[in-house]
Image 1 (cartoon, helix red, strand yellow):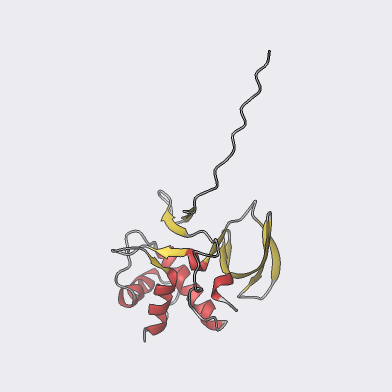
Image 2: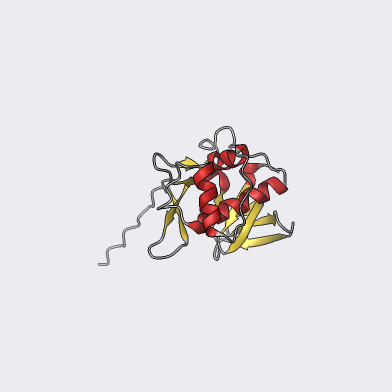
Length: 169
C-alpha cells in the first residue's frame, strides 16, 4: 500500500486507500475493516495524507515529519482516550508542535492514524514530487469555538469565464 494513495474522509473515522476517483466521488477501501465503498463528494471531502500539514512554533511541517518522529521515538503510543497522556506524548516526541493551535482531537487522530499505518505496514514517506502530480495541499485550520478542523485548499482555482448578458433591444 502506498502512502500517497491514503486519504482521510470527512465524517468517516479512520484512513482509507483511494482506489479510484470520479467527478462525483471516489471508491475507497478502509484500512481498519478492509471494506470497499463509494463515497460521494456531495457529502464528504477527501484529504490526502501527503498534503496535510501540522502547525509548529516555526514553519508548518508535513504530517510525514511528525509520523517520522513518532516512529523514531522509543516512547509507547498513548491511549487515544486520555487527552493529557496524548499531549504529554507529543510534548516529548515533537516539542516544536504549536499546542495552542493543534487541538487534542487532532493529536488523538494522529496517534490513531499512526497506529493504523503501522498495523498495515505502510511505509511513511512522501512521493517524489507531489507538486508535479497536481495535488492540492491542504492546511488544517481550526474553526472558531469548536474542536473540529476545516480543510482549506491552497491550490489556485482556474479562472472562470463570465458570460455577459445579451442586450435586449
